[in-house]
Image (cartoon, rainbow, N blue to C red; front, top):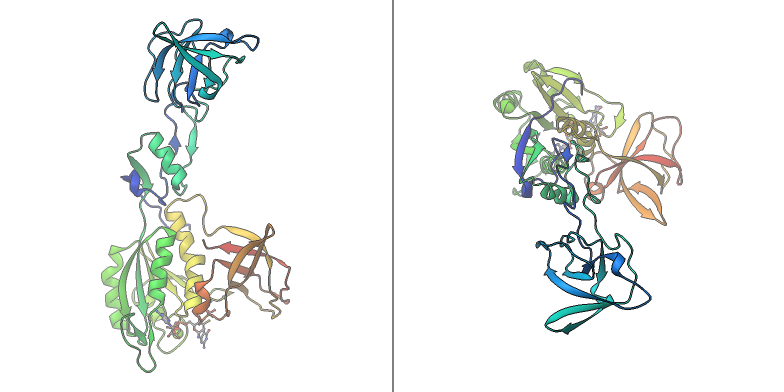
Length: 392
Ligand SMILES: Nc1nc2c(c(=O)[nH]1)N[C@H]1C(S)=C(S)[C@@H](COP(=O)(O)OP(=O)(O)OC[C@H]3O[C@@H](n4cnc5c(N)ncnc54)[C@H](O)[C@@H]3O)O[C@H]1N2
Ligand code: MOO
Ligand SMILES: [Mg+2]
């Protein structure tokens, strides 16, 4: 976090601002409502003229819908037929609903008979009762949701200042990899990590640029990384970071003269997660194992994206849940179980989303959280309270 940069601001159309990160405080530059208005279809009148002892007849002197204004001043025993959202006429201090009056005509004038005492300010939606001018309504760093879109429109943001998305390159490494449209061959597998990461990047609010897959060849990898590094803010590779004969990333970092910040993490899965710094760019060396790759991204890349976007919350939201299954095997390292959380009877539970091995892919389909089990000399039991990281 200390060495990474934060992104710039750009203006986007209001309709394109959903899910983006607000780059400036959203401040009210006028009261909402901007004028006292009627919350009902009815008649605006002076409450002092009403009575519950005897019916009072009011002359209907005007008729306004939302968007129109009654220009005159309302006098004693006068009423203006007014629709929901229309400005309260000057002189009026209350509104009676249409259902509560009887209207009749006499000498080409219209009257309403009212049999009810209204109080001062009854049924008025006041200027500023929703939003007061000058208030900060949404702080910068907030992800824009549909409600915020409504506020942005209310305050005239045809263009919205949002944080620029980081551009993050994705490269898959491994001579065993086939592209998704290729038929299977002996010993080979389809590259799933790249597409998984591209969608994780999308979910995290970044722009993914996919540079394809490379074989385990130092020169090929060096050429590729060098040629694309200037196009991106950060670069993610998957595979080749462990200690195997064809795990070439450590050597590649050396050739690139990248500063390896760490190349092992005391956790499972994702223990091989490596991060190196090259000029002002970070190179994320995520594991080739699908589950380890997924976890490495969420724990290490996602927070960097959040920071770049200057979000309020860095990293995934944490909660405490009740464990729904035993994890009796003790483990010296912290584990991040690919989990599934659910609410039942008002309580939050979490259990494994499938088999918990770092080389497995099936459990990722159901995962909506990680269950963080700190390493130590004991296992965990059903009913234990555990921290979870929400992924939704
Ligand atoms: N002697 C040791 N062996 C291993 C260790 C160790 O500490 N000592 N660590 C293990 C752990 S933990 C992990 S995790 C893996 C990490 O492997 P790499 O990051 O080097 O990844 P690869 O060797 O390239 O591939 C591992 C595995 O994942 C498959 N893979 C690779 N790329 C993709 C992709 N794009 N889509 C789907 N699957 C992919 C690959 O075929 C391998 O099966 O190392 C352990 N070994
Ligand atoms: O990185 Mo490995 O997945 O710890 O299993
Ligand atoms: Mg390997």
